[in-house]
Image (tube, rainbow, N blue to C red; front, top):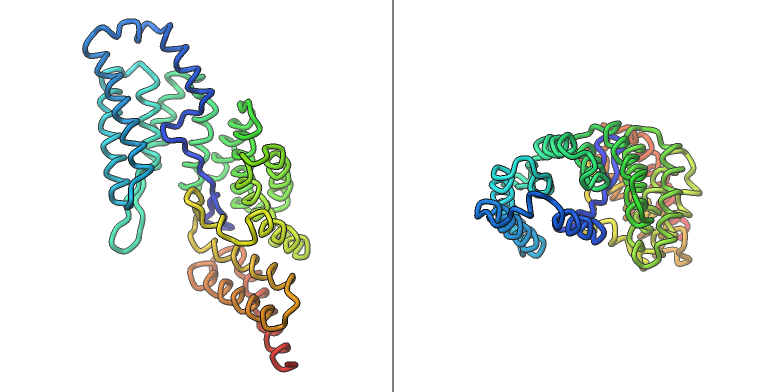
Length: 335
């Protein structure tokens, strides 16, 4: 999930080629009956198919690249091939679809750590695809547009796309992921009460998915904890954070998973601060509890230092930090 304001984390389940198993079956059926593929004897059209295969291979290589620079290089190779395929078959949706997926995953980090993306370009491609073929992978297109609009901080547009993705979804798995992201952008827009309700829906959907949605459940619990805290329900927030810790194997590692990102980046510190507060509430040893409080204080401080002081939740972060500092001081004096 992402945020920029009341931020948060955005879970991107971008399948390597952007196509689920169910979608792949639809592609095979469509290809078997399409005029385009029936004419694949024509060398130029065969080349389109080959380019798409090669581009998908490069995307797979990118997913296993040992460094971010190599990942970017492989994605650029894929984009080049998908772009040529689209030029050769401009009226066929699949090449444009793959080009949009690859473009949405491109990013380049410079020497200062700033990340450049091609999100607006990808948004334009997905809208072009939707205009060309409204029903082509409509659920995935809506989900991807939700992710991209979140990154560009167009939260109302993102919410609309996630709602569309949920309506089109045929499985609890896909619906649960979109529901979680919908809750995130709702919190980003400042409606924390509604976000709590949406997080609870994501939790229910994730629980019904068993092991397949275990990580989504953990992240939904974390998001719900943060939303509750921001809605003034601190006790309930700590309870949800405890559940999130338990669901994550007793650690906060899922918060820094490979497909989780924060917009703005400092939002991670609010999640971890709340996590350390939940840890402290479960500890009986005074020294261990104080250590957790101090880690929470450090996270709230980093949240504010890294940009959170200008967010809608700055006062809440300061209040938490002040209270924890008082608790730590009182317990040290008592001991």
